[in-house]
Amino acid sequence: MVTKITEGIKVTVETEYQPEYSSPKQYHYVFTYKIRIENSSDFTIQLKRRKWHVIDADGSKKLVEGEGVVGQQPVIEPGEMHQYVSGCNLKSGVGKMKGTYAMERMIDGKSFEVTIPEFNLIVPFKLN
Image (tube, rainbow, N blue to C red; front, side, top):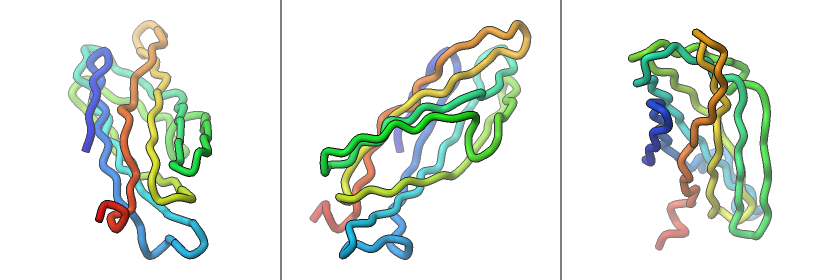
């Protein structure tokens, strides 16, 4: 689990390898990641966009951008949190992800960026 706080917004990431959806013989490794976004600021915020950098140990890099997260643009009140689960696949079974959320303060429309901490995606048997 990794955590990063930006402007009072705490982002925590937990990852899990999904062997039942993976096919190592075909170089297809599936991971899920659970994200928890906690608003410790004094302002109601809305998550507008996301930007992910996915880096596979085979040398490939992917940039994933879009509106919201898993089809939502959640509004998070001070002291509240939003949680979701998403996933990605790798060819090598080892990689990492990092990124940013574009947020907006609801009171004045001010936009700001929140850092998603870098996290590793490693198939457990690759650690032995």
